[in-house]
Length: 434
Image (cartoon, one colour):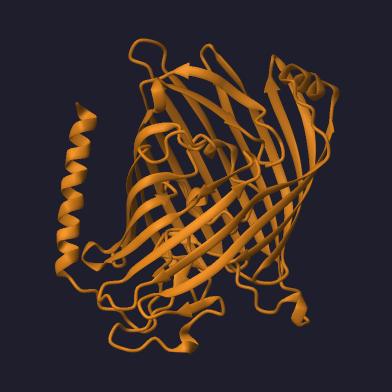
């Protein structure tokens, strides 16, 4: 009954918002940027009463009679090898897993986007189609429309997107500091179909990301593990000084969902895409779940320090409830001085700007990063294991398109009443044109 009430209220708000949208015209400014979806990529449109000139277009962007067209692509390939102690090898034997040196395509994606030219309100469209190297399938990524909603102090996205839980989970997968997202976030599906309202109150410095999603279109796909979910990310931006390159971002994440078919399986890779999920709860019964997270990031010129913690609660009205927790802390230092811009239209960090690429006689941008993280999938009679990992790494942004990563990881696995240790030696090559 509660879920039906929630949907009725959300639908009423949805209709009211679109009624407001139909009667309010957006006033654009020449120097304003507008979001190309929700992942930190932007357009630079001119005022609506002027003609879009050629020099305002990106090199991979074209102008049609009714819309611009931006094309792009992305590729990530990972190479990994391991050094395991005897205890860890015994744990792998129990899992039936053999960790061998490997090179693996993480993903390859084709991208398209644009903004409509003859509408007074900002409206943009986006399409992404990706080959998933893990599941060896093609799938839709963020695809839908973004509608400017100045009367609602933000934008509305309708379609397939990231839920909006966690800074790193919202950022474009090619842009974060680290090698892979921390283990504790693997519990949250990477994609969802629904509607998202994201915005900010500049004077109060309060931002939000509110969404509702369901599995009507995505049922049967690997990421669709919930029948429906509500997500809220709300935070405060007390410092955002672009000239001094200072940012202080604080937020909380809330999520309420109904697991698909009344059951759930939680599993996580040790922040290494070629590596199997080494901790796994197995399937357990659950009626609904709540997820509570907190995130904080501080940037001062070349240095960024941040942390995200999250607790996942799964409830069973006829059985046992379960709770799983994890988090991370990170520190990055830009050796060459390039700093990620903070994007207030999505409350996330963007891509590192490269001043002078290696093909023009420069160094590109070089960044040193250290991560420490953990996820505990033990709860009551569930013994999914706990993983710890520390990861020092170097990111070399050779150009705006090419990124090379050199990664070392030291991990501890507590499972099967054993504590094993493993070292990861990894590299990544990444090509990104967006």
